Length: 497
Image (tube, rainbow, N blue to C red):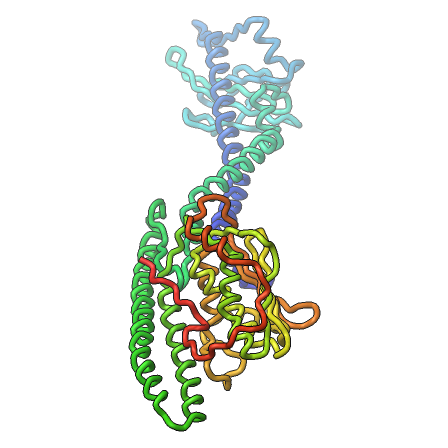
């Protein structure tokens, strides 16, 4: 990593956890040091107080004689404790001039320098040969005389429990502190994740917002106060976006409605032309314009459609109706339609008219791309799936998403199509929570597969009767193509309320 490079985390949770790890690491270093200092300080205070208490005990055995001389009568047990043979404790008694009156040292000298004698002196330390004495110097008033009682302990012989704790503090505290801090870090990570749950929920909600679902908003309940202004601003922006999309859809629908009347008038006037070839060409152009207007209107109405999950449809009956309706178009181009698959009703969840529209648009797209003399196959499965197979050029991998975009056409020179048919299919599929996939066949052509959610109960009576009335057959042969049907390519969905 180059000098000066700053590590930045995109995740709030990662940033918080990283900073917390740094804080825990610093705490694991400074907390034992602070505890060691406190423990050492308290140990010194206890040691100093112990030495002062020992000095008080020794002073009680000191007497001032009538002739001004001093006498020290220690019990035998105390003499043993302060003896050179024991070597742990030592004492010295000094007069106001600093001269030694009594001393347990072999050299009969003072334990500490005379200038250290002060009532508020800290713990005193002094070397005597290889022994380091630590203790206190306590003034005592006996009669009209002030003497100093010095008591010290050889640090090489400190075997009190508190001394052992201080000596091995880091080793002992490490085995306790590190696991505690690790557990604390794990608990904090859980706390952080729970604290960020409202933000994660808002993120999941935001993923579902699209031009088709512009009515969704980010939840504000449970959002931290620091983030609430951002959530409110995003929701306000979504409100403005929804209003703009609604105005766009209304404009598209109104424009499509307004175009249908002049197109109908134009069609009527064209039929009065005397030149048959010119009349036929103009009629084809008008039919293409009518088709585009109908598709625009259908797309605008689909944007507001909300699927009722209680609606079910017989998928096989819908495919049979589509095949029968598009047979004239196929025959006019010297092509056939074959209906294959199961021979029983296949109930799926979906709006009957919209499902027929989706299947019809895919089948008509296949008819337009399969060569003359071949057929388009519709295969219905019992699991809610339907496949439409053709013998055309197939769909390149790079175009398998583009073909479902609005107004996308591979050949811009081709008239009569606005590139909305498959976009309508995608919108219907999304509204039903279904899926559509495209792939090339092993031999030649393309395969469009639609899969809807199977329905088990609640079949409407009307759909049951319609399914019973549709006979299974392979459609081919005798029907005369009706190329003047301007609504052939699209069964318009009802406006949702």
